[in-house]
Image 1 (cartoon, one colour):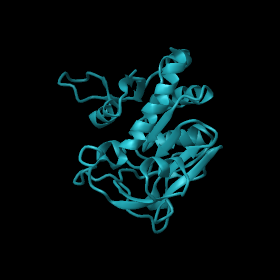
Image 2 (cartoon, rainbow, N blue to C red):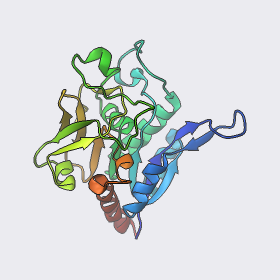
Image 3 (cartoon, rainbow, N blue to C red):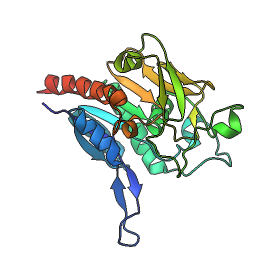
Length: 247
């Protein structure tokens, strides 16, 4: 049985028709989920409260994808000059759906922006810009000239964490494409990986069957290296258990 994995999408204006709005998801997310044994479903970034519970009930697992900055109002801050682009409709859509999913303990893998959404959904805060707010921070930012298949820095995983057990190692070289990161950690989240500058690179939700957030982009790394595939396989396996319960 292939479980249904919802992947959060983003607004896209790259259609040939001028002013034609689309919803898209990076192909790397879809390929990683499908390769791991799941059936990927793109979730639109404009879901309303009436949609959250029915949608979550039909999904076996959720992957929160990357994208824009989250509006600081969601974590009690005002926008600073270094804040990037935001999509408040997407923020409201994803935070509401995620809280519904957490309430029924659906398996969750949160990547980059998704990692930050998970933290904010649980009451945590973010650095709005690492370079401006964290002295000595590494260069974590996305560069057009740099492929996401390229490793930028190492992360060290906490011994005994779910991420370490899945990846079967303690230190890994990862890519990087973000200028924000977790500041105060959300309720129930455990920090399980950090970069050498102290930036939080992975979290897990205590007492949850499968809820992991990673700041790097594992979906972009698996095309040529299977090291990160266990993250997607773990999500799909946990979702498969949910699908069997519902069958």
